[in-house]
Image (spheres, rainbow over the protein chains, first blue to last red):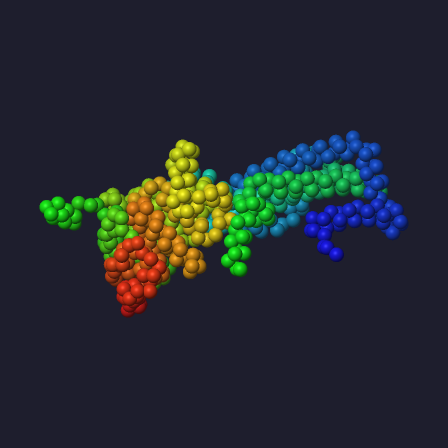
Length: 270
Length: 268
């Protein structure tokens, strides 16, 4: 029997989870209060699409703005801290320690400063997502192969050229890792802060429906957050594929250009 | 007859040497005070010569190269290139080829070769044309769209050579360019370099650890001592050109290699 490809296996596992989601409550293995059947949840979502659609838009708006803040400031501060050795030794340990602090304890302070509307969510999630972006950018710049810089200088590169043509492209892969982490954290930050104190957004719907024991309502919101996270991940991956072509090109895809090389290799070993 | 006499009369003075190093010394600040890295280097490289510098690790070969490339200032002494001092890196006067592939992995082979021209804002068409002809010169026609990780070690160094030559500098500096290659590729690349050199008539200053490589490639081998780096000897390599692999088995080759080895060992 042939083993299924990893891709097929992933789809099969996903499908199995969906079937179990439907079957387990239907056969009474778990009570519907704990896990409502999938179809029932989807039906609830469809019936209340105006409420959920509105909440999704609010959450999306907050996520988008806080991602901009987290990525923008993260890259900016990371570039400065990573690029200047003096600042790096001074600041990097501080930022690394701050990253380990559960920033969610500061959320009540944020609501005091910014109110319970979108502003406090954006500020909180922005700070939450800032750290991984900033740390990754600093690391990306710090770990650039010195040979790249020496070679560029020997070819007569000025400092702006060094930054634009060597430092930025060389640090893109590491920065993207940070964007992925930081972006995911802003989603977490927005949803968690909506769950704690809010009058709108998907996180708020989770909390509200949980207090009324409306489990299809809770799971409908969970489905939307899942979808949001997956969409984010897919778009970051698409971005990665576009910008880091040189890392993956020819490695996985058996393109026609790789063929002659394998031929010569085979000839050499024969 | 008269003409020959005329030339020999003038030849010691007229041609400006490609590289002229005078009384060069370098000291860098170490943890326990100043460390002398290079001491009293005097070296003249006539135009078109292939000069190889050999010496033990830590003899300041790389420091010397960085200074020649205009990337580091010496504590004292002067370096003239084509009769003029190097104020900073100038790839139109000295092209540099580094040890490890210092190619940019996010650029294709062609874009890597174009890089120095792009820094000078050379128009795209001219850039492409010149980079193309350089890739052809180093035997990489048809590989222009490949990224470095799709090329073998030898091919990467061919791209590096093409990049060093693309601005048509009179002098090419090479810092152990084939050190990371396997023995077979290394021999082939040495041979290829001689072919490229004979086609371009550049002055080459080549740094290596390998004595065989040094004797095989050079017109003149400069032997350096361990720290502080001094010039122990310059050995004229009298083997005829074009060089062939068979020459490595000859007595002359062996004696030259032995003489250099003896110099290095007795100084250590």
